[in-house]
Image (cartoon, rainbow, N blue to C red):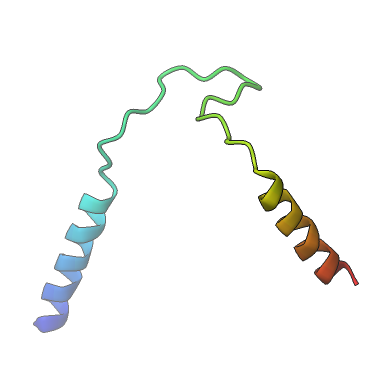
Length: 58
């Protein structure tokens, strides 16, 4: 009996989780990204990534 109740609760939670209240674009243009623009990396972030890449390249 308990397993059935857990199963029903799980289905309910998953159903509600799938209902996002966010706007979705209605029209899609092929080959065009419709999301938010990326932010530029700072010089420090670029250097950190470069150093990290050098560590794993060897």
